[in-house]
Image 1 (spheres, rainbow, N blue to C red):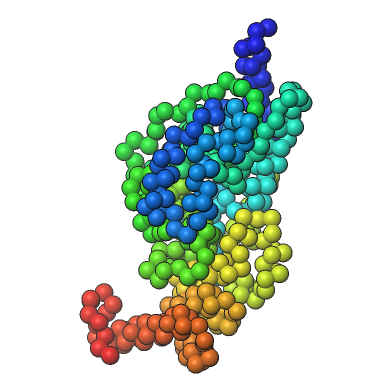
Image 2: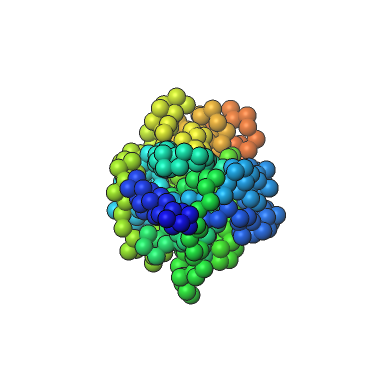
Amino acid sequence: MSGENVAVALEDRIKEQARRLGFALVGIASAAPPESFPHLQAWLAQGLAGTMDYMRRQAGARSHPRHVFAEVRSIIVVGLNYKPQQLASQQELPALCGRVSCYAWGRDYHRVVRGKLRQLRRWLQEQVPDCRGRIAVDSAPLLERDFARRAGLGWFGKNTMLLNQEFGSFFFLGALLTNLALRPDSPMETAHCGKCTACLEACPTQAFVGAKILDARRCISYLTIEHRGVIAEELRSGLGDWVFGCDVCQDVCPWNRKAPPTAEPDLLPRSKLATPDLTAWFSWGEEEFRQRFAGTALWRARREGLLRNAAIALGNRRDSRAVPALCQGLQDKSPVVRGACAWALGKIGTSEGLAALRSRLPDEENAEVRREIEAALARAEQERFYRHGSISPSSGLEAVA
């Protein structure tokens, strides 16, 4: 048997084993520099990464996979299907609950994908004792989508996601960088989006500068997960009831309509993660948040981020039953949380909530939170004037002070 035939047979067995482990997609890419690296540099230079400073710090390392694994000769790229039975944006939420991106409904995907890749690596080392490799699951400076496209797993959609004709975009990527010289698969050269722009048009915060160019600073996923601190007031209404991530640009994609749902047990939804009761969060301390969300993707946002997001979502829903929880949040140790609760109480505008704002104002020492309280009270007063006066908010006329 020739050396080439042995290599081909090994590649086929690698793919068979990957599918046996539950991966929906698997392909092999060469370890050449990623073609999209110049685009990453331009994106960073335009400031579109927001406060994700680690992207800038690690930019050079992403220029070649050898910065991740010095001996790399081939990259095995896998995709694990996580599509739910019902899409997140199509759910009817119970009262006072928030909307969570479906990728976070089950166990933390990093752990699930990494665990399966460890099994694949052990199996490969049994086949080839000299095999060495490193696993990367969204945690190493590797442009995974670039290598996934090169491995034939899909093409870049206009929403920047990797799309596959069978599985749409609902799959997690992982990579095994190896010192083995494996025959690479043919890259996906053709994009199958055609003239469709559904993903670009559906974005609630208009986060797309153009096709395949995302302004992370306006993206709901970035704002609710990666962004630390205050969310700009002009973006809050666009967040709707999303408290962790956003699936809108995926849910409207035609390729995702016919994609099969996942059968992976660890990724099946847990009700307390998929539709959380937001008012309950305001009674939890740091340790309770940690206990409830450790081992899930939600913990990345931490307590402060989740409470900030919950306050904004409750403000957008304008349900008066949320007022007691928001009043409790108005006393939180975090000024970010207090400011978001002030905004939400002003949006809801009940007498109880406005009284809590007036009561808090003299004792509030943080200047930014004071501004939030004052703005919330002023906005509520203006809306009261509109309701009982002779003009409406849509008239374009301002209330006379």
